[in-house]
Image (cartoon, rainbow, N blue to C red; front, side, top):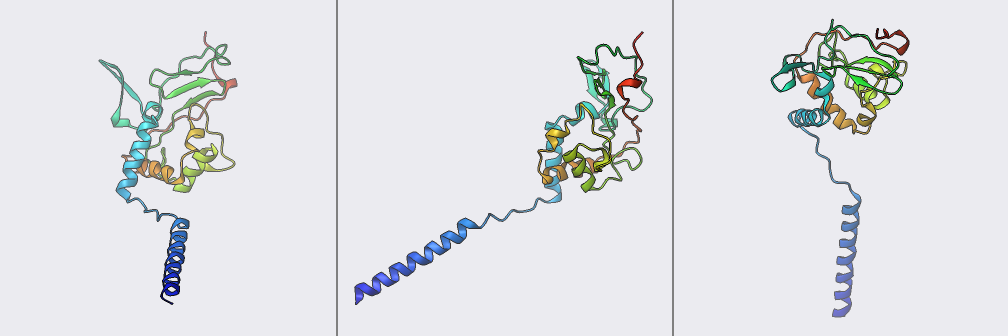
Length: 197
């Protein structure tokens, strides 16, 4: 009798342990949401390692060559900058960047780095998170299906691989920075480019 009771208790314990183990293994770990400060820090990290400053921040030339002009950080191609003539015979084989890396020339035409500061008129200040995520995931300007394509050298295909949470962190970080008013020109299609003399 004592043996049967021992087996019953032992089997009950094993069954209970198996149920707890099964439930525990099938529940995903509760994901804690990042605080706003953590999101901003994550966004700053992603923007830094992604090299966003390389194209979206104008440069000034110092003793060590081109340096980021932090007073115009992320304001894109400087408004009013003259574009030199382009030798279109090279465009089908090569892509070029301007000396400050805010202008790119290639088979797609001429593109200018966008103002990604939170300026409401000339930057992303009026954008909603959904627009930003959609633009990065679809490669469409303003994140709308009817929008023009986001052109090279913007690596939107790489950003499309980011999680929505990472894109949110990038967006939050960009929106936390000072707004810089700078109207960037629209892209120039290949057939409108001036030919080098």
